[in-house]
Image (cartoon, rainbow, N blue to C red; front, side, top):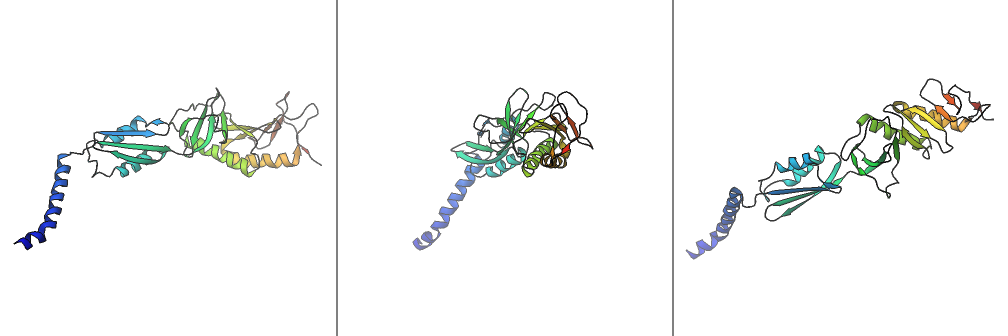
Length: 251
């Protein structure tokens, strides 16, 4: 009899543990009553917190909370990754990291925002983040960003295309401005302005690079101040006139 009890004792222990766990699960002894959500720029957006709150009441130990974090990163692409922490007996904490900044968006009033690779506004840039390239919007550009807003995807991609073209054409030292939603211009190192169409930036800026390497820009009265690449023929202007001027081939 003793031998029989000794042989089934481990089974009884396992059964007791299983029944205890089942009781705890059914009784929701460790159900989640608080879900905290933070990002590296402050509290999570309201809609992210609301989504997480739908999981209140679920078990602290038997719920796949990492899966919910992955869903949030898909719901809010400006949140790139997260860390999960469980605090006994009823609290779950998500800490999300924002996507890496891609460039600075400067409004006409001087406010400077960081934008990530997906086009989402991360937050205001500080004085230590000047290594990211900047695009400055004129007063006529309609988009005025705020944290977690998204730049129009087409405009965002065109901005990225401009910088890639500037790099390829060795025009990196130029300053990039948005004239409106469709057009941009560069201020070249020598002060000239070069206007182009955002959608045609790769071709038009390649043409600009060629012209800068092979032509001098001058008129009888004064040097050329503007190069307009938005038309079938390149238009050159000085400070006194908006008429076309011919480019003189460098000997």
